[in-house]
Length: 79
Image 1 (cartoon, rainbow, N blue to C red):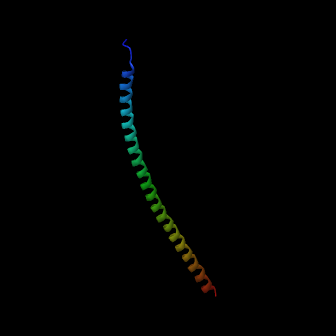
Image 2: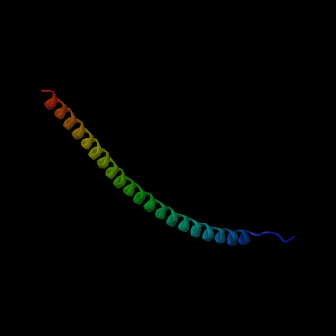
Image 3: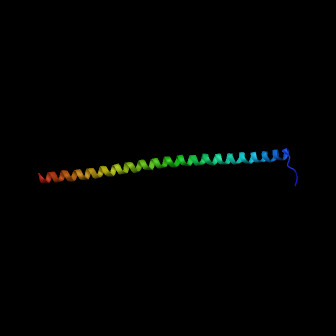
């Protein structure tokens, strides 16, 4: 078995550093894409929840108006 020298270790370490650097760059780019996707999903979710909120408010408003008109109609008929 050949003896490992400091030069051999240095060459292997340099290769390792290059590979790690490339992996970190790739992972950093992936993380940035994921972050952008999460922000977009959050924005879309907020918009949809806002629409649902207004739909519920509109529906409740309509129910209240119908109930008030029924009450007023009953009061007028009974009077």
